[in-house]
Length: 258
Image (cartoon, rainbow, N blue to C red; front, top):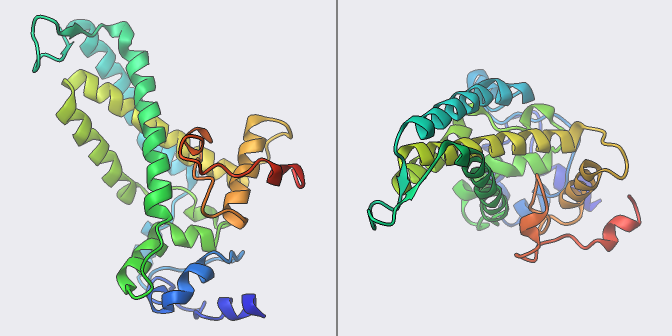
C-alpha cells in the first residue's frame, strides 16, 4: 500500500520534471522506489529528444576525439621540448618524452575515476532540501530519474551536451596546471575514462556477464546500489574509491543472492 501511494504522487501521463519539486519531503523516498516504465521529462519534443541518448552515440562522438588527441599529444611530445615545473625552476625542470604518453594517459584515466566517484556520491546522490523545488528538480534531472526508472535504456548514458560541461571543465583545469601537451594527454586519458564509465554503466544494466567474472561481480554490486544500498557503492567502473572512503557495500549481501 505504501509503494502504491508513493507511485501515485505524480501524474505519469505528464512530464515529471515539473512535478517532482512539489513532492517535498516525500521526494527522497519516492525517487528510490524504482519502476519499470518509460518516463517523460519535458513538454517540448525537442528538449525531450535531447534528454535521451543511445549508447553508441557516446562512442561515435568522443572516441574520435580521443584518437585525434592521442596522436596530437604523442607527436607534440616527440617533436617539442616539453618540460614540467618550468614555472618553479628552470634548472631542475623535467623533460617529458614521447614514451611518457601512456603513463600520462593512464594518470588521466585514474584522475577521472576519482572524479567519477565524487560526482556520483556528492552530486548525483545529494539529498536536496525538501523545501527547495529547484534543487529537487535539478537532482531528478541529473540522476534521480535514473534511480526512479533504472531500466530506461535511452537514459543510461549522458547526452553529449550536458556531458560536455564537466569534460570542458576537466580540460580547462588541466591546461591551467600543465604544459599544453601534458594537459591534453591527461585530458585525453580522462576523456577515455569517461567513455569507459558510460559504456560500463550501460553494460551493468543491460549486459549479461558470465558468472564469476569481474563484470558479473560489478553488475551485482551496482544492482545492490540501486535496490538496497543507495547510500553506498558509488563506484561504477570499479569499487576502488569505495574502499578508502568507506562506502563499500558489505560483501555478505552478495553471498545470499549472487
